[in-house]
Length: 132
Image (cartoon, rainbow, N blue to C red; front, side, top):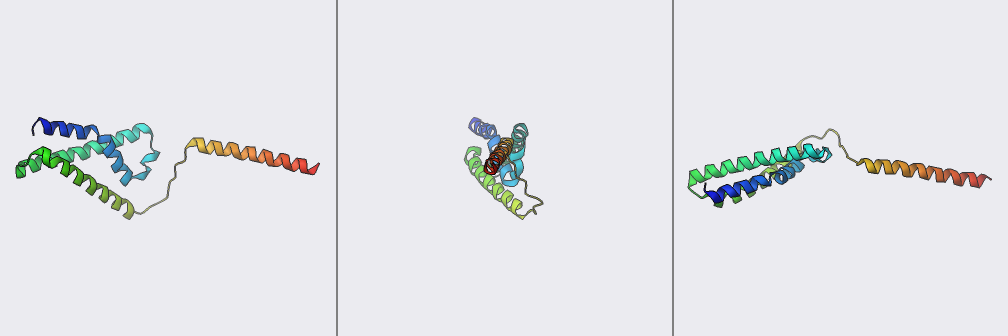
């Protein structure tokens, strides 16, 4: 691997969090419910391991078929990404679901509770006015 190939591999690994998060969302949609730090850690871990596997496969191809790393790496990365994305989606669809977990931000819940109380008070005021 020459300097261009090394820079290309480092560039791909620098974007590992994005690739990792896409892969996590494809296989584990509940990742949205995690805290930001945990989400980032899982994304980086998944992305770096995926990038490392693709880099290793690219280096093996370079030695096996004597083709420069820079030429095969991007094709291999795209193929591996789409293949894993497809496999993770199929896995998620086949895997039996236990319960559906819906994540609702706390702001919406508290705003809804305040609105319900205000509506009840307004209703009660109208009822009292109607009786007099």
